[in-house]
Image (tube, rainbow, N blue to C red; front, top):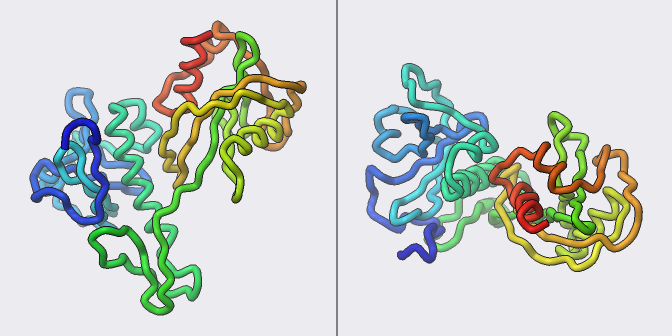
Length: 277
């Protein structure tokens, strides 16, 4: 396949097994990577074979640029391998290209799906992978209940007021970090309705001109962030005091002095504001 679609999702291998196939292996929610000359790389099968480790919960993900991609988990301690480094995904995002980070997120999402669905939600029996060449699912052999990978949607929005951007400090944010407003979509709620509700609930203001910006898988543990921009309509900032402890309008100059760039779509929204205001 040409570069129009780089990643081809699939349940069954799309290409002949190769020593160059990618393996995304996690241990305690950290990804096994190889560090060579200050570059972090995802190991290929030729590297994994040399490590002589046991791999569990193996899933075929699909193919990236003509090479198969697999994910799985390990419990082995890897000693005397100086180039092996385990990284959490947030640290990984600062050291690799966007394609590598996205594939790593896909792998983590699939593994989290397995962990969260080990037993049937109807009868409590053990779940098993469905034997299918076209469908990724877990099935209960006792009652027939079937579950598929599901994503929990959340919105994230950059709200502007003139030449300023609304930033808020979440109680859970480390080091008093500020970011744009975000929150999970409720059942039966549109993304636009969620934008209005989350902004109003968290900081007490109303917004208008809600526009789609982009999206990003968010494997913490199984979400996707749908990003929007919006404009201030009415109201005064009044934080909820539970989730948000402080919020305010910030100019581009103020943001540049407090902003740490990352691969998150929240960071891309802030970059959009800096470039356009």
